[in-house]
Image (tube, rainbow, N blue to C red; front, side, top):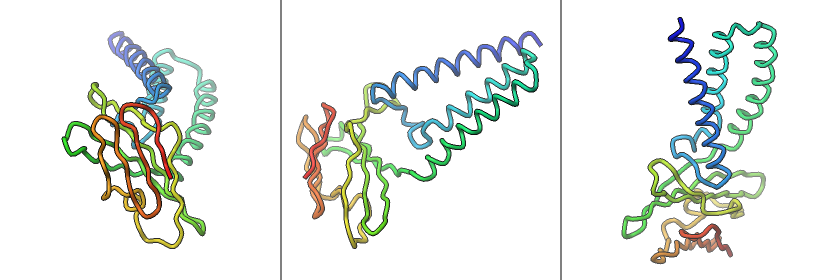
Length: 187
C-alpha cells in the first residue's frame, strides 16, 4: 500500500507540473499539438482524477470530496459547453521548400452572414509544440457563399515569401501571415 501511495503522490506532482507547463506555454502563445484539439478538457480531467486519487490515499472526508466535485463539475460544464459551441478544425499546409508547416485553426458561425475565424500556428524546434502567429483571431465575413473556410481564406492561392510568411489571396480577403513575427495583415 505504501508503494501505491508513493506512486499516486508522484503522479499528482507530475500532473501539476504538467499543468503548470501548459499554463506557462499558453501565456507565451505556445501549445502542445496533441492538446490543441481538446483544449484544456483533457488536462483538466487528468488533474481531477489525480486529485481524487490523492484524496483517496489521504483519507479525506467524503463531504470535502463532494464539495470539490460540485465546484469542479460546474467549472467543467462551462468548459465543455464553450468547447462544443466553438469547435475548431485544423489543417496543415507546407511551404514550397517543405521546411515550414503552417497549422490553420478555423471555424465559422452563420447568422445571416458567415463569419470565418482563423488562427495560425507554426512548428517549433521542440517536437509537438507549436507557436501561435496571430495575436487576435482573423475574421473574414461572407454572405451567400457555399465556399468552405479554406477557400474563403484562399489556401489554394497562397504565395509564400521566403523567410517572411505567406499571403493568402481570395475573392473575400487578402491575408498575410508573418512566420517569424507575431501578427497578420488583412484587407
